[in-house]
Amino acid sequence: MEKILCGVDLGGTKLSAGLVRPDGSILGKSVVYDHVSLDEEGIVNYITMIIRQLISVNGFTEQDLEGIGVGFPGHVRYRDGCTITTSNLKGFKNFPLREKLGGNFNVPVRLDNDANAQAFCELKFGAGRGYDDLIFLTVSSGIGAGIILNRKIYRGMTGTAGEFGHTIVDPRSEFVCTCGNRGCLMGVACGLTLPARFRKKIEDGMQTTLPLPGDSDFSRVDGRFISQGIAEGDPVSMAIAGECADYIGIGIYNIFQVFNPPLVILGGGLMNLGDFYFNRILEKFRELARDMIYDPIAIVRSEAGDDAGLIGAAALLLE
Amino acid sequence: MEKILCGVDLGGTKLSAGLVRPDGSILGKSVVYDHVSLDEEGIVNYITMIIRQLISVNGFTEQDLEGIGVGFPGHVRYRDGCTITTSNLKGFKNFPLREKLGGNFNVPVRLDNDANAQAFCELKFGAGRGYDDLIFLTVSSGIGAGIILNRKIYRGMTGTAGEFGHTIVDPRSEFVCTCGNRGCLMGVACGLTLPARFRKKIEDGMQTTLPLPGDSDFSRVDGRFISQGIAEGDPVSMAIAGECADYIGIGIYNIFQVFNPPLVILGGGLMNLGDFYFNRILEKFRELARDMIYDPIAIVRSEAGDDAGLIGAAALLLE
Image 1 (tube, chains in turn green, blue):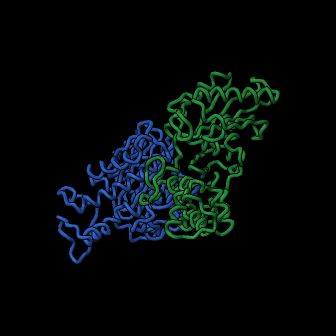
Image 2 (image 1 turned 90 degrees about the vertical axis):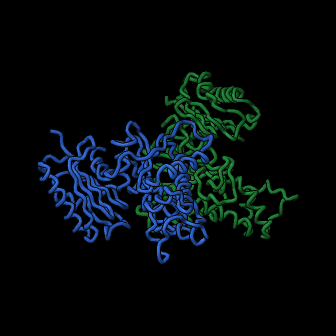
Image 3 (image 1 turned 120 degrees about the vertical axis):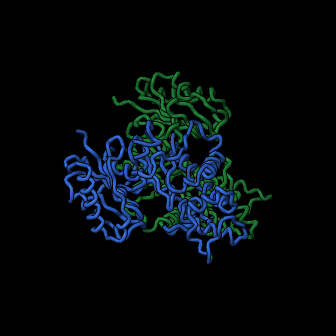
């Protein structure tokens, strides 16, 4: 009987774990949100309990498991299986997550950055099928990325390669990233910038057709809010989506110059801004790349869907 | 008897060819400057003649040759051995340089971008010895780069990977690159920007201690000129070198975030600006990278010297 894979997507909001067939289909999964209050050891125990439940509920035993893959929302020291740091969960400074979780099971455990796992998911089961090389960029509240070269995740020396989100693309920007630097791609184009961008437009006198947040509280301006604005032609929402798209276009152009890749895949919540946003990204890319494209480069949207993190984490065992 | 390598560095100003031992030492070389007036076929014939002379003058026959490596100052379609385009020589649009030169010899010919060849030279014989991965950045009149991953040149789909020089790092810059884009690294930090930067400082009212170019002709402001200024503490020269260094620092920071490499090597004419310039680059890098460096990254100057292009071209045969 073919062994099954277990994937764990340890997010800052959502923790999902699932049993996955080697073809990428999900046999069963659990999603919880109450892990965020726990410390590292508590999370390890919680994940352990969830996996054991998944195994028994689905009629398997631990012997049926090929291994466990974990996607982590932050920096990982890959070779040691340790987390380094994350802004999405409490603690996890140099925490030996692979060893701790592995101690509770008798199977191999792989730990990697969540965007790396998603990139690999695209390669195995998504928009990257049939490719050897691709760059995956996920744009949501933050910006993450994964580099696939020769059908493997490229991790660099420590395991932190692929941080396109922190490359500086506009040092004169008014936006400072959570990393502390001014004008990195994440600092100017991720979901976290939307409230400040919206406030600025209003302060600059632009009129929005959306119900203005009360008490000048712009914190609820998120991708969904802007998405609604685009749907009804709100000029503020369109302007903001356009500005963010232009930066992502610059980011993809930089990726193009550095990697000369056949494929760039875009994922993450902000892709729900839809065709207006996506087409503007492509437009900016083409405006910059012009006659420097000698072979076709495909820039496409992720196909992997909501479970990409979970399936990708499981897929780490297939690398 | 061990075979010898032949390297050809086909530059926009200088054409150098040499016979190189597999340990990287030069047995004999020729340097000419009068190739620039020739067309593609003329250059192929000129290179052929030079190589044949080198072989006979040094007491060899073609049978002693392992092969010929050629470094080209522009984009190359690596698999086909064709040049794509260059701004440094007339013609060479989609020219089958490898095939044409190979037709005159009975040995393998390798054609690659000159910065790729230099990067590989650093790996084999220079500051990159003992490393598996490194990024080489050469800053002179233009900016080129080579990516070495797992002791091989990473070329991407077409062969044009590693163009850090054309990544956008300051879209609000006043400087437009020869590529047509505003604010790419080459557009803001290469030697070609020095005259405009100098003019601007003078127009802004800064005082220079250097003899001002007559007739407001700033075209002779080059690396050597700025170097002299730095030596005598000229504030204009120091300011310009500092600005350019800051951009290179940003470029290296971006390389660090994307590749997480153990080593970045800096070469090219502008490195002759010396410690003031080099230290400012390191300072900017550290200012941006701060606590995000988890493993040591070495940022060092090229060791390969003036013949890096020639030796690197020969070394392509050892890849």
